[in-house]
Amino acid sequence: MENLRVAWYFFQKEVLGMQWLNRLMGRIVEAVGLDTAGRFGGSVQFFLYDVIKIMVLLTCLIFIISYIQSYFPPERTKRILGRFHGIGANCVAALLGTVTPFCSCSSIPLFIGFTSAGLPLGVTFSFLISSPMVDLGSLVLLMSIFGWKVAVVYVLLGLVIAVVGGTVIEKLHLEKQVEEYIRKGKTLEVAQEELTIEDRMTFAWEQVVSTAKKVAPYVIIGVGIGAFIHNWIPEEFIVKLLGTGNPFGVVIATIAGVPMYADIFGTIPIAEALLAKGAQLGVVLSFMMAVTTLSLPSIIMLRKAVKPKLLGIFVAICTAGIILVGYFFNLVQNFLI
Image: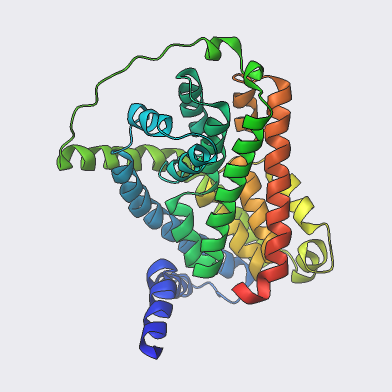
C-alpha cells in the first residue's frame, strides 16, 4: 500500500505536475543571473514553468480527447441523445459534454445545431453547461494542481449542475424562448463515413493545432496574472479578500469571473496562485467555473440564439450552482487537500 501511495504521489507531482520542469526552469533563471527567491526572478520562473507545463498538457489532452470525440460527430451524438428521455437524457447529454474540448463560445454552435434538430431544450442545455465546465482535460489538470479528490468532486458537481440546470429548464417549458430561426431550422442527415485510425489521428492533431492557436494567448495572459498574484500581491490582502475571514469570497470570485473569457487552461495558473496565497478552495474553484461557463462573450453569443428570459434563467441557474459548489468546497476543504 505504501508503494502504491509513493507511486501515485510521484505520478501526481512529477508527471502531471511536472515539478521536474519547475526545478529546471529555476536553474535556468538562476543561470542568467536572476534570483528565484526574489519577486522578479520568481515571476519569471513561475511564468516559464506554467506556460510550458500547460501547453504540454494541453497538447496531450486535446489529442486524446479529440481522438475520442472523432467517434461522436454531431449527427451521431444527436442520434444517441434521441434514444433517451427524461432525466436520463440530461445525464447522457452532460456526459457527452465531457468529451468535447470546447470553451463556452465554441459549445454554442453545437447547442444551436442540437436545438434545431429537435432535441429537447433541457437536454441541449445540459450539454451546453457541461461542455465548457467539465471535461476530461479539466479532470487531469485539476489533479495536477489540487489532487485527485478535488478533481473528481469538481467534475461530479459540475455534472450535477448540468443535469439539474437542464432538468429545470425542461420543466419550465421555455421552448418559445428560443429564437424562431433556430426552432424552425432544418438539419441534413449526413451519413458518417467510417474513419481509419490514421484519419482519427489526423483529426486529433488538427484539433490540437487549432485549439492551441486559440488558447495560447489566454494561457499566456492567465499565467502572467498568476505570476503577478504569486509574487507581487501580499498574502495578507488575498487572505483578507478571499480567505476564511470573508464569507462573501465565493460570491466575489463568481462575479469577478464572469467578464473574463478563457477555458480551464487559462484559469489554472490564476487558481494555483490564489490558492498558494491563502484563498479558500471553494473561492478558487467557483472563480474557475464562472470563467469557463459564464464568460461575457459566450453570454452575448447565446443571446443571439435565445430570448432574454431564457438567457436570464440559464445565467441564474449556473450562478446559483457555482456559488453553492464554492461554499461546499469551502466546508470540505480540509478533507480534500
